[in-house]
Length: 125
Image (tube, rainbow, N blue to C red):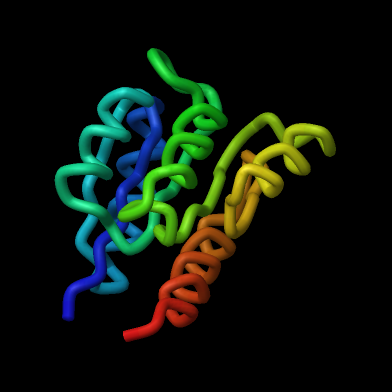
């Protein structure tokens, strides 16, 4: 069974490196470049995991996460937040909104890959 990761990120270099690393692990990767596109893609073809940046156009990651957790068929999608907004209040806020994990940018690529694989293992088959 193929596992899918949706990367919601507007920085092309980050998208490129994460896509490469996750595809190397055998995962299918899709990309959304703003909050509105992220929600559209989540609703059309829900992934197993969402890698969510907080600073995006149209809808912030905070708003996407809040909407995601309020929609029945989407509320169980695993969410890994990747953000340069690493202050304690931002971290606490995303965890209260229902993120499964938070990693501050800049990050070590292997930490992101390990976190994604860990979250995938926690999903019932």
